[in-house]
Image 1 (tube, helix red, strand yellow):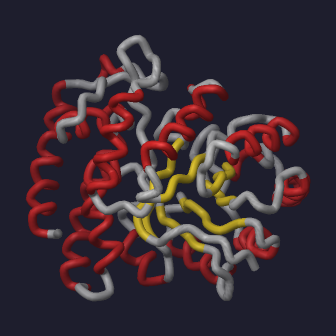
Image 2 (tube, rainbow, N blue to C red; image 1 turned 135 degrees about the vertical axis):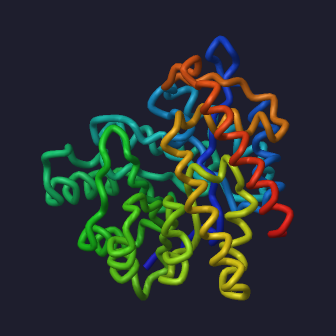
Length: 307
């Protein structure tokens, strides 16, 4: 089995700040990196769906990852995806270039290896072809990205991925404890880690053996996720109380994400524009803003209590 791994804890799915003309705002990106680091995260997941990777050019995806690595300055880890190409040949070249940016691991999207109507046999065959074209020195992870469609890894595919010795972790988006436990069982005895993207099942998944959290709510209150991942064993009662808030708060995801996260971060003092390439930010209504303001008001109360 691969001895390579990434650190347990919290890995924010990074937002990409944009200027009003739609170009990437690297000055605000630097402030965003500092905001994450100050909140005790273990690392940052750059160039993911939260980063609007499907709406970035290859050049932008690579530059974004390279810049985040530079800004992190080794204080926390950096992993990145940007795995959007269609053909296996293009995916291999894309992954090689992403690995060259200096990221700790390249994260592969599970839906890239088979179409929605294709079975796990196609997935496995294409993954084998991909692995044959990638140097063994590159640490890899899986990400069950919801776009363009969500393909959850079956326990059998988990076992296969772990058996290759090439994969260190999975960002799980199943939102179901049955699936999470089955995947953890499939990886038992290896150094493979599972990071939960779902806030509502986080505490239960940590108890089952998950390594931490990597989800969109880190863009609202990353510090609270850092606390629960670090302290749930030592302070179970307080962790259970915090979990109740985190699960309820995560319903804000069903609003206009990532625009609402940009708005929340602006309330945190970051000079971030409400600019998205994926969504029309003009539809972020007054009521939506009030909902985020009120959520963040309660969140700050918890942040004072959980330090």
